[in-house]
Image 1 (tube, helix red, strand yellow):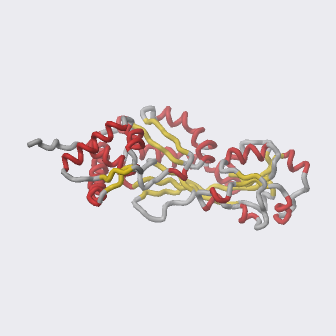
Image 2: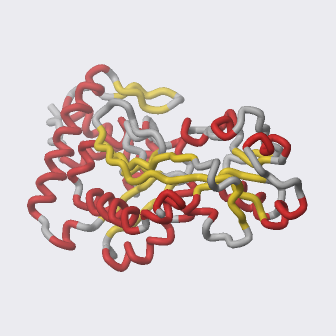
Length: 305
């Protein structure tokens, strides 16, 4: 009679990766191994436990009832393992590994990437992965270790901390404003071409702000990319609502109705509560919180004066 092999913690890591993604290929990329290796480790774990953890179908791997129960046990073991690693390692030895961050395009490209040289100089053993397409990331399945969001999760096993408020104003290029009718009040705004987000692709309520300025504004050009909106504004295509920390870098842009239009939004940082115990994740969160606070005037704009 063939004896079932004992499973190891590595087997549980493979199990959790597949449970969270539902796909062998995605789990393999996260674990930096092959599709075949993940499949073999899952088969070995099921044989060791003498229980079926997944239903295999063309759409991927779906947890069975027993598999779903086993997730809770495996995640508790994962959390305790991270705590043990934290206790056994100190200083820079604890600060190593890969951290995947999901953050909005504006925050990523116009702030976070400017801080990378400082981060890598301080923490050379931490590798960062930055994802700016937030719609595809699932915090519950741990597809990202850390997420910067405009609207924090309302429930769930998450650690959440407010990073900062940030302010937005209406901007236009100096060339556009010089060649179009003067804007003297909010009621003048609907007479101008506007640039904004594609309405049915807005992934966070905080980005839906044209109606907050004037209900009759209809954008002439729409894009899901804040970088495309900025470029269109600098090209003189129309007016646009932009965060101060982005627009203030461009002297060819001029604020419109600065004393009348000032929107406030928020950035939050969040991660799965279990991952908060990880030294590498805690290091990145602490760095981001400190970096944002040191650059508070850039986010608060006129409100910081």
